[in-house]
Amino acid sequence: MESADTVHQGSHLLYPGDWAGDAPWPAARELALVILNEPIPPSAGPLLAAIWARASYRICADGGGNRLYALCKEEGTLGQFVPDAVVGDLDSLKEAPRSYFEESGVVIHRYRDQDSTDFMKGLDYLDTVLRRGKDTRSCPVVVLGGLGGRLDHIMHTLKVLFNQHLQRQIVVVSGENLTFVLPAGRNRILTNPQVDGPTCGILPLAGETTLTTKGLRWNLDHHPSSFEGLMSTSNIVDEREIIVETTAPVAWTTEFRPKPA
Image (cartoon, rainbow, N blue to C red; front, side, top):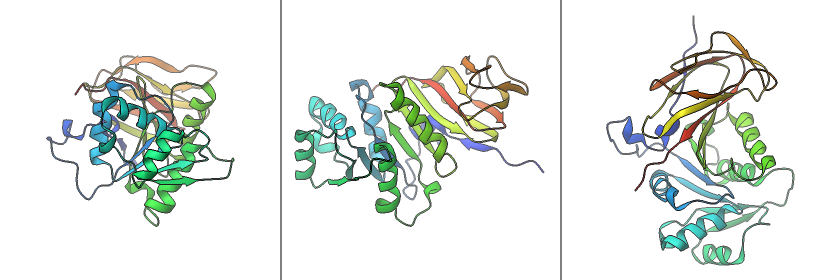
């Protein structure tokens, strides 16, 4: 018997009304927001507000607190965006944001170890403090930032996605990208033509795989794919539902165009 598809909501986690008949975010469904240390452009403000309103947990990973503070100060919305915690080794958190958050009752939690990044520390705080004892799979995580700036930081963000993909659903929104990991097996991706694509890519960063796809401009049929060999980059999303069958985990990434206010 064939195993069931793994369904990925992708950008529909950001705009659930586009596929759920404009129904409100279910009260019983949890969502976590993690903000990393990458500039948040004003154009992302409406998206931040939409995710913030639905999120059950809101965490800034160290310098992510600077980014949230800077955007809100510029927009005059500081009082509207008060996170649950700012966590990390706190080597990047500046004095003004730290003082403001402390005065606003935000937990400032320092991790002293240097064997994990602030992104990993944010996920650990979510699991061990905010959601202690709960199933990680029951709470999707939306990450703002992490795929811009220094190449080593980008590679680490991708590494965390691969290491965590069987434990939780993580969608990263960064710059013009929306990225998540597809596990080995048959995956069904629900795309949103209002914000997804048209360009997309399937990145075999966990080693060589064999890919079969449907719904793309240039589909693959049991085609080997690897970092050293063929990679399906600069492909085009042609259908609302994309099928990707893969023998190893791969990163799925699309061009992302957030909705204006």
